[in-house]
Image (cartoon, rainbow, N blue to C red):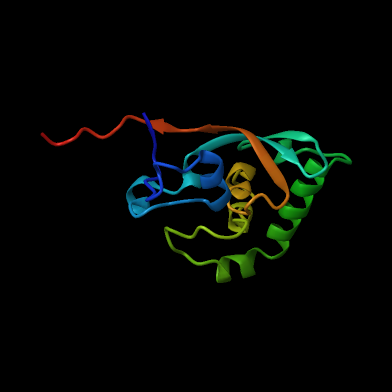
Length: 143
C-alpha cells in the first residue's frame, strides 16, 4: 500500500510534513495532492483543545464559545462575505498548494471541509496528531 502523492523526497518524507506543505509531486495531476487524500484529522488547536476535522454539514458546525467554533464562524463568515473576490482571485489550477483554501468554504451547499483547509498553513494555528488518509495498492511493475 502507498500514500498517493508521489513526491521526490518520498524515501524520507513524513505524512505530517506532507500535510503541512500540501505536498504534491511531479505526478500530482494523476495522483492528486496530499490534501486530496487526507480524510480526517485529530488536531490540537493553539489553546490546547483537541478537535476532529472531517467533512460535516454546515448545520453541524460547532457553536458556542470554543476556539473550534470561533474558527468555523470566522472562516464561514469571511468566505461568505468575500465569495466573489475569492472566486475571482484564487487560481483555477490543479496544483495550487499554498494558502488556506478559503475557496473550499464559498459554496454554502457544500459541507465544511476543515480537513482540506488545515493542510498547508504549515502548523500556524494547530498541530495534527492523528491523520486518517486514503491508501492505495502499489502500482504493478512492468516485467
